[in-house]
Image (tube, rainbow, N blue to C red; front, top):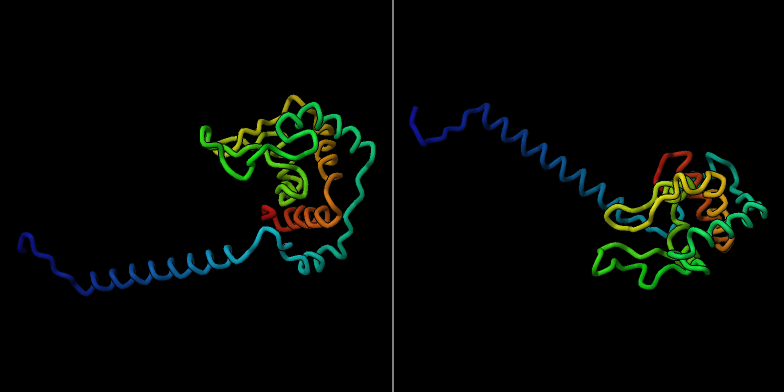
Length: 183
């Protein structure tokens, strides 16, 4: 045995080949998965035809006027200070603050992105907040009842166009049926 020298045996060569093949397979998989993910857009309804095969024709349920009226009150008392009295959001909501590095409150109109989330996600944000590293949204667990949270969401939806409501309803169904995030 010589110190400082390195010999490669047949087994060593085999291990190097297997390791290289594993790395290449991983790179190929990651490249394909990334390409598939980046080819999707946020504004194209995902798998609408496939969803209709599973669920039948999509009919967006109407909103309960009493729930929407209650939601308007809940929204005005709890949400409007950040998301705006007209659901317009805060200025420059698309860009993080240069001091806090957190995003301002987005609008809840068609101009925002609330409609790009399933109902379960939106109710989770209302209940638990969407804070953390990117947002200052606080949760209302223990402040609002479950029916009041649902009413606030109904009020927000009542301000969307029919096309936006249909799109968001499809995301909610997809989230429910396939367990996707809605994006």
